[in-house]
Image 1 (cartoon, rainbow, N blue to C red):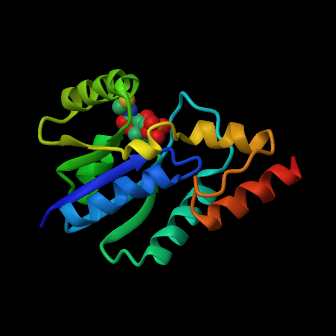
Image 2 (image 1 turned 90 degrees about the horizontal axis):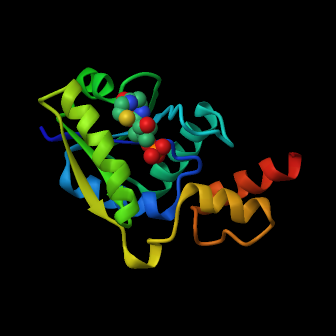
Length: 162
Ligand code: PNS
């Protein structure tokens, strides 16, 4: 059985993430969509809130081979725990390459049996990032079409409270 982890901060999960997930569900028998803590980032939503959001998206999309989960710790340890031998990550531009190159080097050092594969984002979404979405929403710009509808509502609710 081909098992992968699609990890990320997903704060929030965007349409670009959904593109990558759509490819992953076709390539793998089981995909663990894992919301992980990135210690380098300040978050808008808690892990539990992000997990709830990705669960809603997976249910709405009808992906039957996706398990939504969260994990605090090393990604490769999580991959071992769930029996995944591949990690899936999205790539948008060369700036992503530098970042991903370093993550891959660390993960290879930690676990020689796990490999990362990369899905190139569609050109229409090459500008899209969670931080851009947070920034646009913060300044009351429209994020319609950049995140799934359920998540758009959650972002509006959160910012209205702030
Ligand atoms: O969506 P992000 O923030 O770019 O995802 C980065 C993430 C969460 C996959 C990465 O920070 C990660 O794997 N964190 C878990 C801790 C870990 O394993 N660190 C070693 C690799 S840098």
